[in-house]
Length: 444
Image (tube, rainbow, N blue to C red):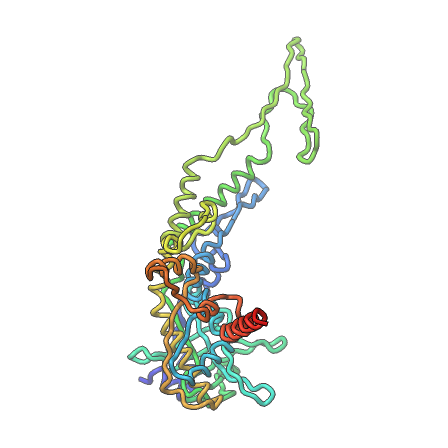
């Protein structure tokens, strides 16, 4: 029996698609991330409107974007601050410059958010010719862009990457299937139930120009039931508030008129009625109100919210603002975010592999497409940086104390630490020139 790779190499897309299976649940995860709450029976979007005689009362269905908060926090602790890519070799500057031109830090933040929310994503690299010059570009592929079929060998290495997508051409919509291998990039078009090869190019990178990553479940999966419960309770609570926010009256006797809801200086007219027997009946009117929400409901809201954030190691910024951080030390600040930091540390290994693959693709592009030289032996060090602000003052004071009051930074290093100087070396030269000018003026 032919393998998937052999079917793709032979161009038998129909048989290949019969064997290839997309990652399940991706489109549903993407919908839930965008506040669709009709995917599970327990979700608030499944609440049915009330039917009262001939009237349909619409019930509240309030989604709360916990999913986005969980994903945004987790991805920010990984790529919210640029990755530090370094190499001792001089020619590595060409690849690092390509990294910056492709805006890879921003792409990886988007890529990570997509993996954590949809459970899979890809970054595809491609050459583009502009005014006689070839440049390398990159983009993130998401669920909205099509369906993906990575093909791995028995050792877990990517041997092919397939992308099934649609393009509109006026009123018509065509389906395409693109196969990336180390040797070529082939595009097939579906025509009358048959896949026809419509484009074939040599792969100029000489390796599959795709970074693919997936995870089993979306980032909020372990707390999905808590989120469903929270949203359902809040929606029911909103209905209760709507019910009691408009006054409900208990009338006794003859009430002549009730003021309209938008009237000012409201007056209720109450009639005094005398019966045939001569009995006097005075009218009376009470407002029925809901004095306060049950304490048990408030406790449940608070407990569910703490569990949602706690079990996903997500920072609850609103509660931190309420507490007020004040003049907090750098160590104490890190302890506040310790759960999020540990979570990011656990994920760094997987994402470092993706960063390394992206750098290898850029190395191949610089060598084979841009003709910048041989980069096959160039290696890079990848360091994730913290999104939390550093307390430089506290660090320097600690170092000065440890060295017995001696200086711990040169002026040039100190200039390099400031965020106000675009070019630290140039800024330091300016400082030296100004210092020489000041000395000259003093002796003049």
